[in-house]
Image 1 (cartoon, rainbow, N blue to C red):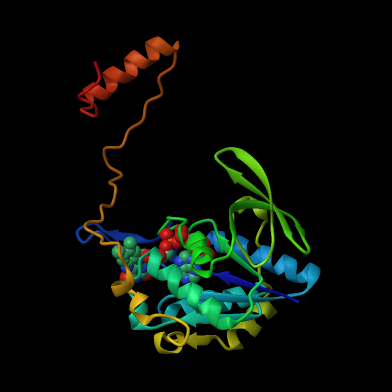
Image 2: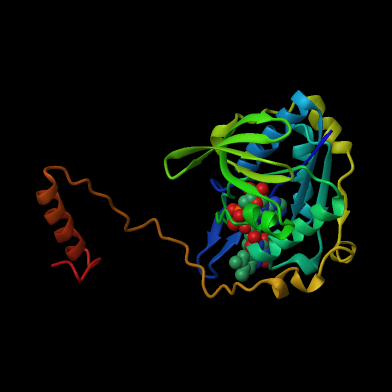
Amino acid sequence: MISIVVPIKQVPDMERVKFDKEKGTVDRSSAPGEINPFDLNALEAAVQIKEKLGATVTTVSMGPPQAEAALRDALSRGADRGILLVDRAFAGADTWATSYTLASAIQRLGQTDLIVCGEKTVDGDTGQVGPEIAEWLDIPHVAYVSEIKNVGEKMVVVCDMEGDRYLMESRFPLLITVTKDINSPRLPSFSDKLKARKAEIEKCTAEELSAVADASRFGLKGSPTRLNKVIVPSEEGRKGEIFRGNPEETALRLADALKEGGLSENVK
Ligand SMILES: Cc1cc2nc3c(=O)[nH]c(=O)nc-3n(C[C@H](O)[C@H](O)[C@H](O)COP(=O)(O)OP(=O)(O)OC[C@H]3O[C@@H](n4cnc5c(N)ncnc54)[C@H](O)[C@@H]3O)c2cc1C
């Protein structure tokens, strides 16, 4: 049976979340948390493989205790197991420390054939964590997968990059990151939601993970990135203009508009 792991991140509902412009931080209490939308596609892809070929689907999330709700949601959508990496020692992690922690948890699980991530998150939006997990585990990865053609001895997928489509084949173990085009995530039934509410979510602390990992690489102390300042872009003062006409004329008008707006001093 294929063993699949889907790392999922709980993100705030970006339509409703408020930003503290003074502090430059996201006020996470202003909106409920939900599974990162791309991770729903990742989970759906894994569950479809399970339904077709037989597999176990384990979801792993690193986050605060509230992230347990995201793992329950994943169980109601077809995952078999949910593991929450929860510890103060994981706080303040950048993508490097996040991917190390997730990779260590996957290593601790034992044999994993396939890891399916979302292509990115709607809050951090770096798209780095998936490929970094593959690097830590020293396995191949294919990013931006929009179609799974075949899962057999090898996996054949289509990935979309910069407007081009590539047919890729890889051996297992393998990590893929998926785009929204890969599928339409299912909605959980009421009874599945009820079942998930009672299911056990396993917890894993930094100490437990230290058996397979170097604890100095967790959280803020394992994060080489330093955040100097976060600026929330202001909606006010935004305007747009479309210039039409022949290219020469349009370029001149655009250059004038950039100069007028003080956006380019070097335009001649
Ligand atoms: C200096 C610095 C400090 C930070 N401090 C904090 C902090 O204190 N608290 C905090 O919440 N964030 C913090 N962050 C943000 C944190 O680094 C990101 O949330 C995390 O690394 C994921 O990056 P991303 O959202 O860009 O994921 P992406 O790379 O865009 O995500 C790709 C995929 O990776 C998987 N994935 C990503 N994150 C997780 C996760 N946590 N669990 C499971 N799967 C995941 C999902 O499958 C996702 O679709 C900090 C970032 C920096 C740079």
